[in-house]
Each structure stands twice: as structure tokens, then as C-alpha cells.
Image (cartoon, rainbow, N blue to C red):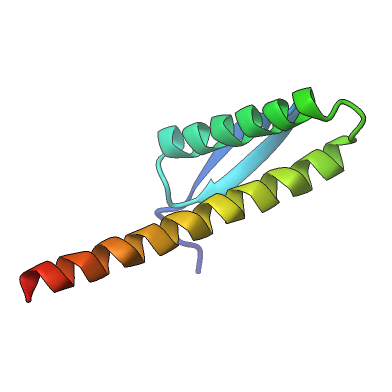
Length: 86
């Protein structure tokens, strides 16, 4: 049975149109798409010889790297908070 909370949002990322299906608000999906588009364009600007597939992979690698750094920072802050609580 299909989830009634799912919505379809059409976005453009790096000149390509995508339909994203999910439970997030359309505003959130559009915001995420705009961040991906921005990062792809930034990578492209510094690496003009790369095709869009390689730019997409580099964008994914950079995004996961950022995520892992933030995840580690959250862990550190949680540990600091626990230490402060005693």
C-alpha cells in the first residue's frame, strides 16, 4: 500500500530535471536540491574538464565527508555534555 504522506516534487539540479518522491515537505526538497546544485556548480567551476557524472560523484564524496565530520562533532559535543552533567 502506498504511503499517503508521500509527495512528488520536481526539481532541477545541474541542468537536469528530477522528480523526488518522499515524505519531506516540498520546500525542504527544493532546498536540498538547491544545495546540491550549488555544490555541483562550485565543483564544476574549479574542475571545468570534468563531465557531469564525475562532478556528481565528487559532490557525493564531499557531502558524505561533511556529514561524517558533523556526525563526529555531534558525538564530541554529546560526550562533553555528559561530562558536564557528571
